[in-house]
Length: 249
Image 1 (spheres, rainbow, N blue to C red):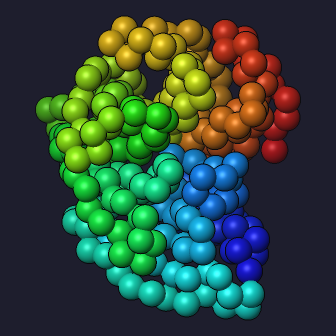
Image 2 (spheres, rainbow, N blue to C red; image 1 turned 90 degrees about the vertical axis):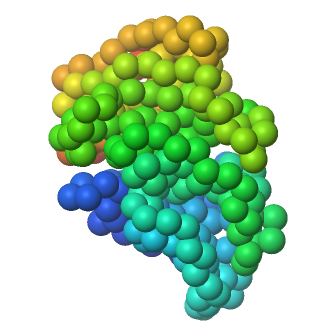
């Protein structure tokens, strides 16, 4: 049953809304803790025998352990403006218009709220690796304000007290992905930025790939999947300074 659901979610992902007025695509999502991986703009994730989805206000939980059906379990109220969902270990990181929520799903049907990290109102996907969370904040063409487009890196070593440790200016960022010390950031019509985040206090630009539309990205096993309005591309990123195009759909 879960394999069928992964496929359906992968196909239906293109119709979900990550930010008002915008659609996104997502890759096959496996159980949390396995090799399955979705994009940063995803609104769903599978952890064990549970499917977690979000709407503007809450997390919906479904039991997908059955072979022929899935069973709705319950809703967990989160807050206003919920947009993205990213799983990491036994935790869910929920991107909202004005911040990031962290939930513990050790008890899968009863997610426990651990903390909330506040930022200015924006479109704001999040990805996590180790003790750091990476959030892009976009106000241009999304939620115009007196704020700015940026990347924020957040120390989550204490999940109950996330703390921003650095910020980096961007130009209309969308989805993002992290692999080792390399961070990939989609900037729509401006293409794809590749950043070295070895030192989160001193972020360095490795290269920028222009001439494509980059909306969301999934790095896995030295292969980078980039989705955009003009198609889906795969790159070999074994050398982050020289991305090699492998295919385009």
